[in-house]
Length: 485
Image (cartoon, rainbow, N blue to C red; front, side, top):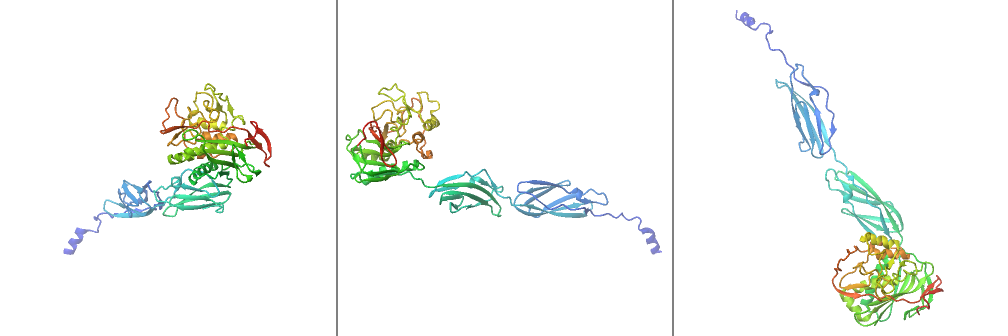
């Protein structure tokens, strides 16, 4: 009876709750890459099914949340790449009864290669010279990784390379061309490259041979030689034919003690004389012989007053004065008339608008602020003073502070501007205008701001007959009458 009662109560099981099913995974999410700083949305609801039609809830977990951050909203997973590496993302789907299914996929945050920014300019060098290039600004890394730099030359026998930190050194070994490739490498070994051309030019040194008289002291020599070195650098690419002399040179009372063989490119006879005592004429320069054809000097002279030169060394003005006088020895001022570059020369009255018409000098004058110059024609030339000043210098009232005006200030540096350097190109020299010092024309009516005692450099140019010689040294004509012997 008891058994029957139990069976009656339980029946055959038809009153049990219906069976339910756990969610299951349908398909897979493919592994993928996600660069640093980027985000991705993955719709995961379509990757699960539930036989009972239950509404599923979702959870997400990243195995490396510092690499890939993961959140879920509804059936969508939000991923954010934070750092290089790999993370396994696990998505779990649950039904209302707590039954679950999970799928996994991998997200890789890759190392991104450095990026080249812009272009490294091509380089021109002379044999024996070196260029330093800071290259960090030409590369960037998307992840701000520190970069290591390498440099190679396609022709190291022409241009050799070296690297220190982010500075590439290019050394000119021999004339020719080479391509230098700079490689930026990150910690993961990924790279970016930039290349630039290097042209190495041979040394065509313009030579100024300075012949001193026996009275020249070492400090005097050093001051003049420093000035000569500057002009040799400015004119380094000038190639002039050698001139045979095979005789002594005499000019304005100066002479070589021994016969001179060949001159390449210019000889300057330098003497330290008692010109006129202290504080007046500090120096004088002139041209003695010119080349036939180019009309550029072969031999010149420069005289410095012994009464003043030591004081100029003490004030730091001796080399500056020598630079000024060697410019005259190169033909500045003296060759303007013979070459047709001086217009409206002054005749001793200031109303004449003397000016230099060389296109290179005019372009430099404009570039330094002279585009709107309304004081007359360009480039204004000194129209006051004696025969050794007017028509031979820049106009002092306009080009204040420029080295080649007829005034100087002791203790204040005058500027060797591109106007002066490029005016030598108008004479026929090949110049390196990059060696010019920064200069801007003072405004109209502006005061001469440089301190120091004003020194008058007028009458510092010697003017006399000049020989024109051929490459064999033969005199073919004389400008201005008899030769200055």
